[in-house]
Figure 1 (cartoon, rainbow, N blue to C red):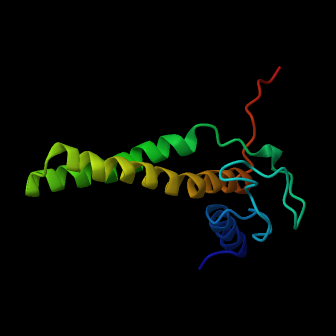
Figure 2 (figure 1 turned 60 degrees about the vertical axis):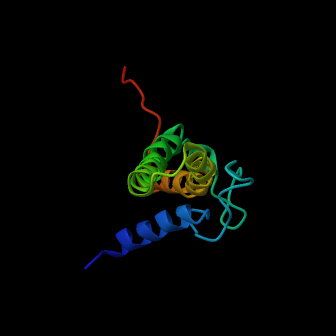
Amino acid sequence: MTSPQSSSGDAGIMAGVKGCCPRCGEGRLFAGFIDLAPRCEVCGLDYSFADSGDGPAVFIMLIAGAIVVGTALIIDANYEPPLWLLGAIFLPLTVFVSLGLLRPLKGWLIASQYRHKAEQGQLER
C-alpha cells in the first residue's frame, strides 16, 4: 500500500510529463515548446528552481539512438534496402522521435527536481 505522500508525488511526476505544474497539476509548465514559463498561472509556483540542464538531451540521445539504430539494423539485415531508402526513412524518424521525447523528459526532470527538493550544491565553510 502506498502512502498519500508517494501517490501525490507520483501525480506530480506525471503532471510534469504532461507539461503541467508539478505542484497543482493544472497550470502550464512550458511557455513555448521547451521554454519554461516563469511561474504557474494557477498556484503561483515559481519555476526559477528548475534547471534540467543537458539531462533531457542525454536521455533522448540514448533512447532515440537505441530505437532508431536498432530498427534500422533489423530492417537492413532482413530486407537489405538501398542506403538512400534507409536514410530517407530513418533521418526524419530520428528528428520526430527526438522532438517527441524532448518535452516530456524535460517536464519529468523538472517535476523530479520539485518532488525531491533538489538544489544547487554548496560548499560548507
